[in-house]
Amino acid sequence: MLTVLSRVSPWLRHAALGAAMVGTTLVTGCASFYVDTATKDVAATEYKVPAQPKPVQVLFEFQTKGTANAAATGMLKDQVLQQIKQSGLFSEVKTTPAEGGALLSVALNNIPLTDDAFSKGFVTGLTFGAAGSQVTDGYVCTVNYSDGSAAAPVVKTARHAIHTVLGSGGAPANAVKSEGIEAAVRTMTRQIVGTALRDLSTDPSFK
Image (cartoon, rainbow, N blue to C red; front, side, top):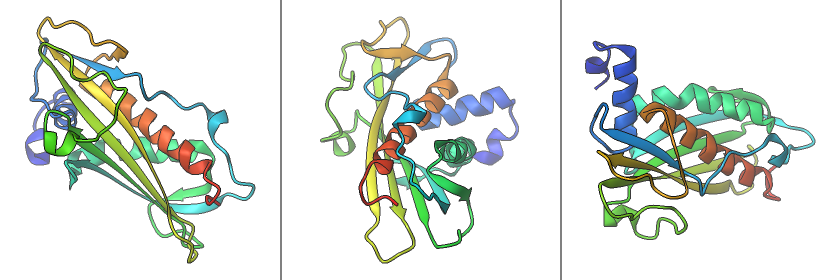
C-alpha cells in the first residue's frame, strides 16, 4: 500500500490513509466526517504529574481489527509521541530503551461497528446506529505502562468513534464535523490518547 501511495500527491496519500483508518473507501466530495463528542479533549490540568517523572520508552501501533496497520502507524506516530511529551508525565520520551526500563505501549485499534463480531459490547453513549447512509467506526486506545520494576503493569483503555455520512445524509447528533478524513482521524487520536493518558496518570499505581 505504501508503494502505491508514494506515487500520488501528498493530499491524496493522506486521504487514502485516512480512509483506511475509518474503514471507508476513498471518496471525494460525497462523504462528510464527524468526530463523536462522547470523548473530548483533555486539558493539561487534568493530568496528575508524578513528583519525580521518569524517562520512558514508547511503543505505538495503529491496528485495524487487531492487526497492525503500518501505514496508519507511520502517519500518527509523531503526533502521539509529541502528545505524550507535552503531557509532562515523563521526564523523557524515547523510542529506544529508557534508563530504568520504564515502557509505555500505546495501541489504537479501529473496530468497524457494523461488524457484530467486533462491535459487541463496544460502548454505550456514542451516536452510532442512526438511520440512513451513516457508517460509524469505533476506536479503542489501550495504554500499558510498566515502570521497570517487578510491579504489575498499569493498563487503561479509552474509546471513541468517527461517523461517516455518505451523500446528503443528515449530520449525526452529538458529533462535530471535520474538514476531512485526516482531520477527523487526528482529532480522534488526540482525544482518545489524551483520555487514556489522563486515566493512567490518576491511577494510584502510576509512578
